[in-house]
Image (cartoon, rainbow over all chains, first blue to last red):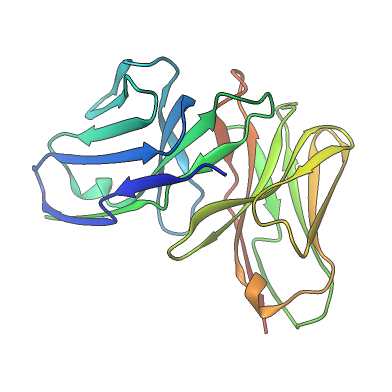
Length: 113
Length: 112
């Protein structure tokens, strides 16, 4: 099946710094999604991308759907303590109609005040 | 928010016993999913449903079965729980565009 490589696995940053994380795939996706998970909660959707080359922002978050359709990145600007959590990328393949999503293993973000 | 409720939220069970987890949604979404989350593995798909009585296997389906007799309910059953099934289980449904998955709050299952 498809595999998503998400990096980095973890990040320790100071409040106010910018953050960047990315996902690469062994196959083409037609949708990329970015989620954040707080401790003890389910993942919450941050940004959805549907078109190659698309660049979408949600507040301090910006995500892009790679031109090759095999990668995506998420940037967080001016990080704050509440950005702490696990960030997941997810992709939907282009071959089927069953809407299965494949998830990366997550990036654990720690923000030091 | 797709109005997803998982029950129970926490459960401890003994090896060899059957366990059923329930996912209930109020948005009339067609697609529903069960994932398990384990450290170092992220979220892995167990089973999914694309309609009432229509289900299919995901990547880690061994030892699990599912049923969907109504649009709003998707049940995950461990016929004979094993310690390797200790995990956090998440239910998800698709949103209006049929691609964005919205998650429940999870069920923490411990098999002793």
